[in-house]
Length: 179
Image (cartoon, rainbow, N blue to C red; front, side, top):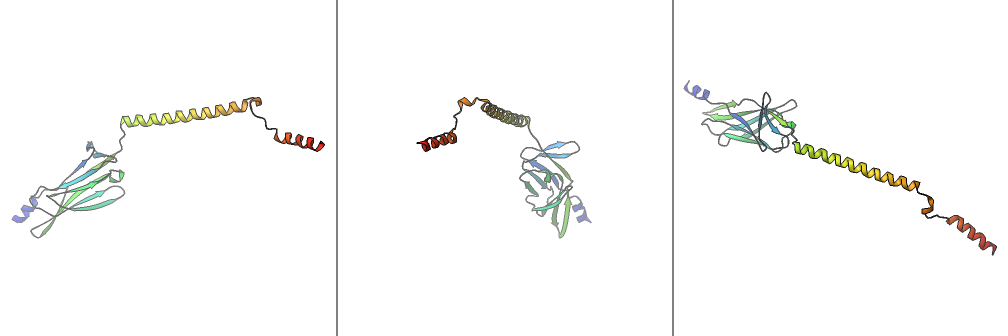
């Protein structure tokens, strides 16, 4: 009975998130990271028993994934290089540890993660200014092109070289035949 009490005192593992751009807590939405940034999920235990493995379980509306890593200093770091909507969902850590010939499975609380698509105000303004400039330049170029083309069509023919080639050759042949 004494050994059972000792195992009951084992705490559930902790689960946390770290991101290169910071982690934000939103009311009723869990934790949030920004799209395209790297992030890590850290599973850790605070008991005296070393070793075992950590299993990271992920669920969202379209998929379920399981990853495992060995426990090093009672923790494991699951790294994701680029946050995307596919990483949005619920995560849970399970610490599998072998104590006195018993295999224990300790579960963390669930962590909900949302991936935010963020565009700064500066980025937003720059993108729209560039689009407007492209539109103005292309409209101006088309205006100049068609304006020049219509002027050429309206120019009097006196300024243009006249090609009398066929008529001139016909007259020249007749003159040679007469001689």
